[in-house]
Length: 293
Image (tube, rainbow, N blue to C red):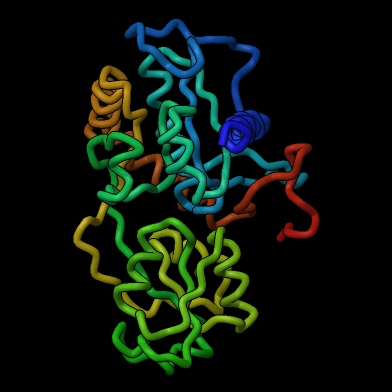
């Protein structure tokens, strides 16, 4: 038992080290002045975890040379909050299904990744006030749209229906299409690739994400809105940091009230319609050549 426990500790440590290997931080600026004297996982920094495969929330915008930079209204919001708190922003990209575990382990200050206030996540993190009222969508291809007359028609054993692992969309797939062959995929980009290749028949995706993909892939079609009683997005906050939650909410509400967040959304939608990459970068911080658009 002791050996198993030791191995578990080592694996946990390696996970944290690998997570921070891909971080994006302003190393030149150094730690921030920490206006509110907040305790954070790294002194002077606001460590934010995200999953950059979810345009227009978080993704990589590509310049004319194909160089990636983090973009999306969640990333703009993260920078706004860091500036408000007087902290240097440090962003740690990861697959979405790792976010809850990292927040439960206390290795990050915030999770900003298009999170819905799912009660199943409350044990791992505190929730900020809601900042964006999103909707859910069922998406398919134009070639297969005639197969589906409404949401109920997706619930057939012959259909392969996908959703991203660990998301509320996965729960919606189980709720509305329980008789279909449900496919769990790690990244939203995997869902789109499987749809475009005809390997799956449809998928549950957040509405604005579906709209962003549809703008880049004309063969995709949003079939209908999916009812969801907890619509909206929140920031996950380190469970043991009540002071941080207080000031995050203060910054968040000011950002929304002053109209800054609306501008973040507008900018992100424009960027998502341009050259972008959604997914994890390689070890050199470049778009993987095997997955590049």
